[in-house]
Amino acid sequence: MSNPQSGKREVLAISVLSRKLITFDIEGVRTFLEIASIAHREVAKLCKESEAKALEVGKGLPVDALYSRARSRLITPGPEDAEKARK
Image (cartoon, rainbow, N blue to C red; front, side):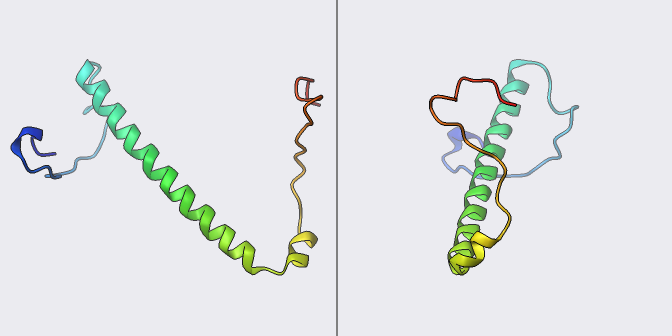
């Protein structure tokens, strides 16, 4: 990354992240946190894109075909059962 005070912010280069590059000082932890934050944002964006594509495909299918397909076995408990132990 370019120097933030240089006026022009840009990516100058990339490097392979390895344990050797991350030190256990505060700057290394901050670097790792920034990389993790960027990865989190990118993964969330990819998930939203995949969700939108799946919804688009689902809306294009005949409704009767959806009901004939396999359903999830997960059952969401009602409010009165939410605190009870699961089997």
